[in-house]
Image (cartoon, rainbow, N blue to C red; front, side, top):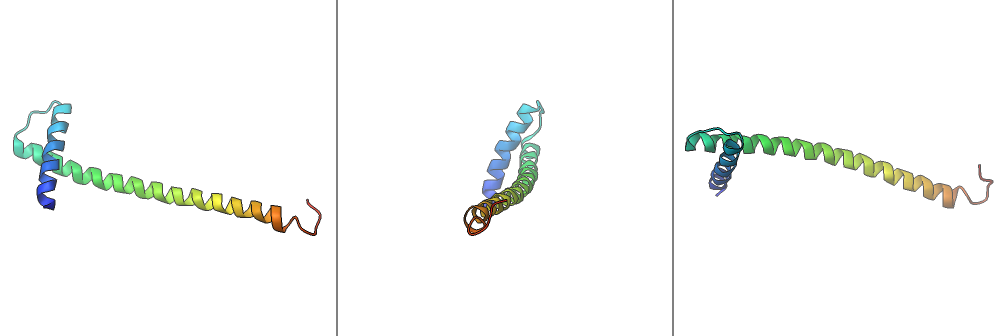
Amino acid sequence: MGVIYLIIIGAAAGFLATRLMKLETDIVTTVAIGIAGALIGGFVLRMVLTVAGLLGGLIGAVLGALLLIWLYQTYVAGRGGPKK
């Protein structure tokens, strides 16, 4: 089923891409362009999402550390001693 799905999506993507670029090709070339474009686009998108996920993790970690520092300064360091 996966191969049939790839051919159908590839044909649709190839048809749209060749029409947008005003390129006249036969059906086999159109499907091949669509399948190759789907593979390349999927790889690039996966890489972009991985990098975005790593950056999201870094931002989340920094925000979590800032929250812990604030909680420590507010509730732990503030007890019993003078504030700086």
